[in-house]
Structures are given as structure tokens and as C-alpha cells.
Image 1: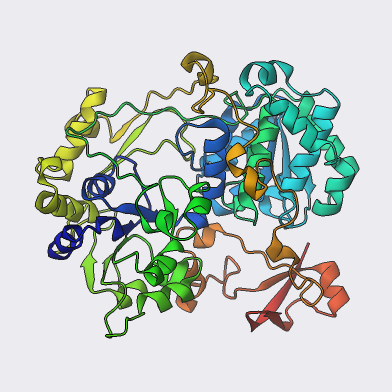
Image 2 (image 1 turned 30 degrees about the horizontal axis):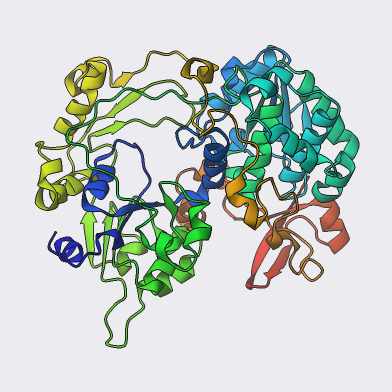
Amino acid sequence: AGKLQELRDRGEAHKLTASFFPHSITDPKWRFLNAYGGFINTALPHCDSAKIVAFIKAMGGVPNHHIPPAFFTVPKGGIMIMAGRHAFGCLDDASVPRDILEAKARGAILVVLDPLFTADAAKADWWIPIRPSGDTALFTGMTHHIVMNGLHNKSFVENWVREGDFERLKDYLADKTPEAMSRICDVPAKDIIKLAEMCAAAPSVGVDSFKGIMLGQAMDFGHAWTNFLAVTGNIDNPGGQPLPDLTPLAPVEPVPPAPNLHERGWHRTGPDKDKFAKYSFIMEPTWYQAQAIKNGDLKVLVVAECNPALTEMGQEEWRSAATMTDSKGNYLLEMLVSYEIMLSETSRYADYVLPDKTYFERWELLYMPWWYNFGQGIGLRQPVVEAPEGCRHSNEVFIELGKRLCPEYFAFKDDVEFYDRQLTGLGLSVKKLQDLGGLWSPGTLGFRKYEKAGGFGTPSGKVHLYWEDLEEVGQALPRVDLAPEYRVDAEQYPYVLLSYRTIFHQGSGQWTHNNPQLRDPVGGFRDNPLLINTATARKEGIKDGDLVTLRSRSGQVRVRAKCTE
């Protein structure tokens, strides 16, 4: 608290960043950051920040995180497109594969776009191998065929697409033929046309990509994907792209005003302020931290439930920045605080390591208008065992900091009383929610909510296909080319290395992949093999089980090959 008071006294409160995964947008951490004047920084590059920004620009509203199609609402003949989405193998929600299979059983069609023959592809009615980063071209080629042949949903376009945008889209699509897009995405033009006509005729089309969105030029894919949904009329309809309901929690008065992030915050005031502001929303990805430290614009970093020294994009740059000093030998990052259950790589760099509570030991009100719940809902996390002495959940510490630094906004006893006040908006309390079994949800899911609301959350109230704020950088409409990283040095390095997640390592990523004691011979993960297509293996003279050297511009590794389709 003393250090944070000093930082604020010198007018640099915005040089505090708290880096954490936002379980709930009503979390006390957010309240503290708004009251103090700092800002949030999260691990969003691992997820779908590009899709979130694309959806906000196109449809407005809440920053939709995952929000896949509501597969349990897909009708007979509806189409489910999985674009780089490993629903059957990474098990973000166990209900998703169940609902997809039940939709198939009632006559829905599953189409999987993926270079890998995944478990999803094995269950698909149609597996389409696609060149990595070719998704934007594929969806744009389908949109061309639908629009140019008058197969679009005319009612939705006329009533709910901003005036002039459809004409601009049509002009843009003129040379984006299935044949032209086929040369980029490596999917035959006849297949692009076939899928486009299937989608135009189907009662619904839902697209799910989630973490597959991070495939390079990701916001362009999000843009192409949204345009495709709009011209086929598959926004907030059964089987299409749902818009989430918001649960009416009560504000805890007085409500701290959010700092003006466009004027403050290092990533908005640096030399690239104008460029980054067009791509940003309320949170920023972790890799900004290293640049901010170098700029002298990040002085205090608080890290909870993440491990940037090991598991973030640019981890080597992060480690380097965290140890940088000025001419007098003082660290550029003046204080690093790490909340942890077990000492992590990031903890080694920290000034303070605070022992956190596990989710078995803490109170938490879980409210997220995203994931696979769509409708209103609240979950209560309750301690089931006592935490070791001295452990406090990060929310508790943020509340205590608030009482010392911003007492007018923290005039409540503790986290439980804070949640009690929020729940009054539902006529509930923590005790009443406990009596309900810890979960409140009406169990309903509405569709076409934009009709009752009088429009979408965009300035025009309609879907925006054309993004004029990105005209000067050539992204007013999607760029269809492969991402640069897939094209650079392609002659010297002709193969593309893909990574993916599996249920064996869900939620722990690199930690278990690189821990030999936790590898699983039954599940086939005693090794971390290189999967290589059988045809490519034959071409290179590689047999199943061979040790091979995998080389890129950044280094090389000796690894065992596993031949696969």
C-alpha cells in the first residue's frame, strides 16, 4: 500500500497494471483498479481477443469471449462449422461435444475445417483440410458466392445491416471469387461453392473457432466470419451466433469511475497510440508488459493466476524486461507482486510473493456473460477446506488495499459482504444463493434480442460490415492473404508447425507438457512427439518413431516423429 500510495502521489497511478484472468467482470480487482486509476492486463493472446474486437466492431455490446453457437438449439439440417476448434479434444466444456453429437443425431451437419485430422474431424460429416491461416480466404470465398448469386438473407441484410455497408461489401467481393480464394486457402473452389450453397440453404449456420482464432491475421478472420454470419442471417438465432444476456446484478455504491484509458495507460500514450487504440478494448494482452517496462511506463506489476515468465507470448522478452535497470542500477520495473499457490517462474522475479488460496479455499461470485452459458447466470464458489494460515485470495488483498488507498469505494467488511450487495439486484444474498445450491439461472435463452432492444450495440444500432476507423491501415474489410509468418522463408522452411490443446493437459499447458513426472503413457503422452503427415513423412524418408531434427530460424530440437493422417 505504501508503494502504491507513492506511485499515485507522483501522478503515475496509471503505471500500475494488474495481470490476471478476469473470472468475473464484477470482481473486486476491477473495482480497485478503477478506483485507484490502474488498468487490467490479461493473458488474452492465448484466447480470442481478436474475435472479441471483431465482434464489438461489428455488433457492439459486451466483449463476447468464447460464445460458441448454442449447439443444443441447432435444428435438423442446421450446419455446425468448427474452424480450428478442438471441441472434442480440449474439453473446455464437456457439454459441447455432447450437444454437437445430439444435434447430429437429429439431422444437423458437422463440418470441420482443420489441417489436422482431429477427433472433431473424425466425427464430422465433412472434414475439409485447410492451409493454416486460410480461414479468412475460405469464408470470404463463400460470402462472394452467396452475395453474387443472390443467396443471402435479404430480410436480415435490409433490416439489420447498416445502410451502405452491403454495397461496399459487394464491391470488395468482386474479385474474391472461390477460385481466387482457393489459391490462398488450398481448398478446391468446388468445395467452397458447395459449402456456401449448403450454408445459404440451411435453416441455421453456427461457426465455432475459440482458440483457433489465434492463427495469424486473426481479426481479419473474425471480420470475415462476422460478415458471413450477417449475410446468411445467422446472428442471435437458434443454431447461429448467440448474443449473451446480462445478469442484473446491483452496483455497489458508490461506483468508482473507470479511468479514461484512451488518455492514460502506457499502451495508449506511446508512439503507437493511434494505431493500438483502434484494436484495443478494456483489456490488453500480456506481451505489452515488456514494451511498457522498456518505455518507462510500467512501474508496478501485480500478477495473479498467470505466469508470464513461462507461459506468455514473448516470455524471453518479458524476462529480459523484468530485470532491466537504469544507469544507477535501479530496476525499471520498481515492484513486482506475484500471487501464487506454488512458487512459479514468475515468482522468482518478484519482490513479494503472496500465498493465494486455491478455488477449494475461497469465496468468489462467478459471473461471466460468455463461455457456453449464454443466458443469465450466477455461480457461487465456496470454500470447502480451510486454507493454510497466512493464505489470502487475491480478491481479499485487493479489498484491503482499497480500504487503505480508496476507502470511499471500499466501505464494506469483506468479499462476502461485497457479493451480498451485488446479489440484491436479483433479490438474493450469499446465504440465499447457498440455499439454492450455489447456482442461480433461469435456464432460458432468448433469441433475436436486438429486435426487442431496438438494435445492436453499435453506434448505428445495426451490424457494421465496413470498419471506417481502419481504412487508413487497409482493414476496413478483411485482408484475405495468409499471415506473414506463414509466408516468410517458405522456401527454406517449407513446413508449418501447428500446436493444439488436449484434455490430458487442459488448464496447465506447458507446465505438464514439460514435466516428465506427469506424462501419461496410457494417453500416449509419455513423449511430446512431432505429428507429421504420412505423405510428407514418405517424401522426407521418415518412418514412424524416427528421431528427427526440427529446425526453424529461431532454433532446433531433436524429437521423435509420429506419422499420422
